[in-house]
Image (spheres, rainbow, N blue to C red):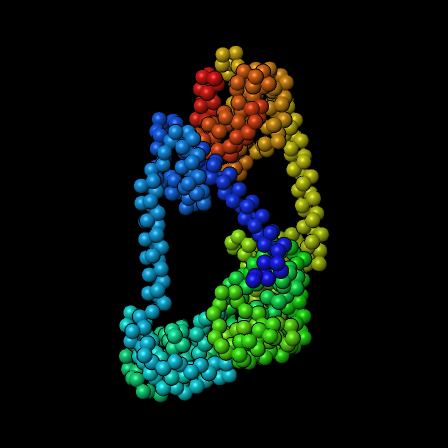
Length: 529
């Protein structure tokens, strides 16, 4: 009954595995945050988790509230479910208000014009038309005109509306938006329409250059989809699209990021089809006939008995109601500018066509020119110059680290001597600037070798980034001291968190001004064992 399950067996299996991995990560993240909440409850002798915290776990981190209840129940803690539901209801109300707002913007108050006849769309073949005004409205701060026919394309199918002018009684009205309600085309203009009357004759003129830029992007989208199938596999299908006069965006089903080579291959295929000057044919036919042709349909989209099919030579055949150019050569050029994931199993490509590629190239040339000026190099030698600078920089970093290591080794006795004796334990707390964690670890090992009962608490500060390291000697580990537990509490004072093993652990921190306070807490914790 569902042959696509067999056809896409491997893809489905891969997608489910990815979902499992992502859910496992969600659980790990949620557990970490839940443990922090539990620690706060323990500290304040509370046995009920606030509803707002449970909702934050659910809404922000995707952690199921049932899981929260179950884990807390094992520890004798309950969840304020009334508070959780209150936050959930508030969120739903905000979503409803947002939806209502969106509907208001869409101007769906169709009571005034819903009995008008459907607009006749001429825009597949015409850019200009004389039409009769059927409806005028200037309420809600918008100026609306409806005609018996129009060459203006209305936003639909991912393609943005046309712009242009409407001339009525020698006055120009500039079209800024065109939408469609039940096949009635709504033209919104910048100027007041108070002097326009039903029955007036109007001249409608589409901005041809704007239409052509949008159309070539739409045609490129069709070729792109087939190229993605060729490179990534037949599982690729459209999950959303957007085309305007500046760029195109295409969302598609795929389970992993595309490689640089795959992006280049797709780009090359599209440009090859542009250079082939394939004829673009647009024709209406019964849906059964279109399906026999192998026309690609968008899953979930509703189609009538008669459909419009757009063919790019014999390379791409799709159901489509948008506007297109008549030959792939008119696309001019195609360049992918980004590829990224936007949801689980959904990737997004953004690309440009035609003269936009010239602008993109000019921007890149400007960057190269500026880099050449900075490196005092010409464009032909810039790669070699940059590689040499990177190599020189690495050598300098090695030299600096070596000098720093020698400096630390020379001052090791001084560092140990600066420590405090707490109940027979040598506690050393110290801040190090421009010292990486690897060097702190080497220092910690040296201190362990020198002091058998020692705890080393070090903070490394590099360009505002703070790392805290705690090292506990083996003898003290056997007595119950734990570096992971110590570093977690110490780092929290400075706005951070972390953990690790009993002998050595690491954490990040945010507040440099709190480091001394964190060191004082370390003394207290060691004194209290």
